[in-house]
Length: 220
DNA sequence: GCGACAG
DNA sequence: ATCTTGTCGC
Image 1 (cartoon, rainbow, N blue to C red):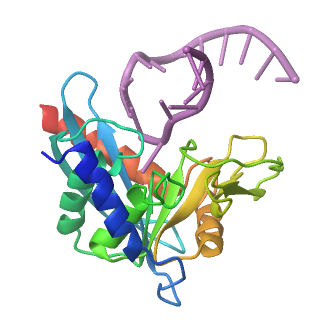
Image 2 (cartoon, rainbow, N blue to C red; image 1 turned 90 degrees about the horizontal axis):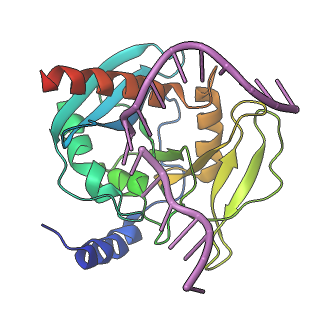
């Protein structure tokens, strides 16, 4: 298995391929959410990708893949744990979406290479990182209203590596960052549009739901 | 040494 | 991630 040192070296090498500008279709038809579920009492995990119609948010297709975990949870090396099941699920997709939203960080990472970047560079598609909690960076003065944004600043070089985004008034923000082939501004705009009723994007919620079902069915 | 630490 | 429904507080 890949060692921790090798994983870090690989991140530093692959991170040079990340594209931080909009390189997506002028019209977005399909958008996918990705998530990975864990089983409480086995080492099974399920990668899940849900493709939605961007305009109506209707579910178009869902692909899942169950397997055993192959890498421990180490903050900063999270992608090496979740990439395997996600790549398998991606290969099962019949409808390839215009872009993806990962349930994790992209550039908002100590080496600027969170799961959303790793996934994006690997499949060469536009990807947005949208995490529920922060891994790296500091922010201040985030408004309480829906749509409020505060820059996530990297403490090592002072650069903006993401946005804290309030998707519902008075509810904890989500953390948006570039995964691949999209700008932070576009990514932030899209995530807000996907949060129609809840704190998290509909893409993430749907992927989570079907991943859960797939894991339960696989256990039996 | 202490706190922080995606899922 | 996983414990988990109703309940406490603004």
